[in-house]
Amino acid sequence: MNLKLRRSPILTKNMIETVKIKRIIDECDGVKTFVFERNDKSVPKPGQFVMVWVPGVDEIPMSISSYEKNGEWAITIKNIGDCTNSVHDLKVGDFIGVRGPLGNFFKIPQETNKNIILIGGGIGMVPLRFLASELVKLGCKFKIIEGAKVGNEILFVNEFLEYHKEELEFHFCTDDGSYGEKGFATDLFKHLIENKQVNDLKNSIVFTCGPEIMMQKLLHICLEHKIELQASLERIMRCGCGLCGLCVIDPLGLLVCHDGPVFTSAVLKKMGDFGKYKRDFSGKKISI
Image (tube, rainbow, N blue to C red):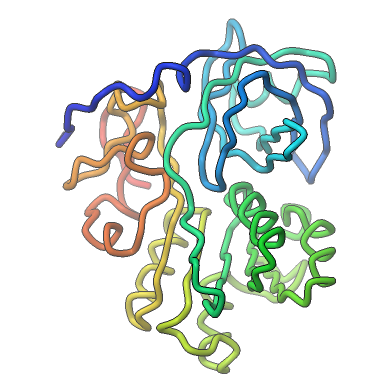
């Protein structure tokens, strides 16, 4: 394990704040959004995450799915394990612990003529939802490509379709063809390139989050066409602040919680583990 020593981040970011759940939104099968307010006046940016603590159960990292100026934060959680199951069992008025925002964030280009494409798969749409809302606020035009295994796993459809008022472009696909095109998000992206629906490739930028195999394929496409890429990675984390080392990526020794979770194509292409290996709770490297 190539693990570099890190300085501790700002103390306040690692203090747990107890927050009350204000609203719960059923997004699709097994996915819920939890809305809460915080006393912490930090303003998160798209791509950042928080550590969510369920007393007596566990603490896990969760991407921020939205933030409003009235102080409302939201996290969108898929029920896949003991801790997420415990969160899904909570009701409006219940409490959870939150610390953050943590990690880096998507860098929105300053150039107004950039071709911006958001490409996500499954629960990976969560940080892209936050990014999309910020791009709309800034008046940026962009495309969204969203993929999922089946139609009832497509996230935020109604919300995204509301953006049509801004003359934005959306493409959906599923593995079985039950919603949108049949196939994978990477195939749909290649199709758009081949049919000249993505123009001026060298002036384009792709933001992505989703299954790492998908993002690895996307990296190869972007490198081939000299397209800038920013990808949000997921790894097991115990601390969220660069201490436990479970999220280290070899051979660079970068930590997803501290150096990420967002990495550029220039860094991703040097990551031997990207799309291939991660670590389990013991620190053992396992195949993705």
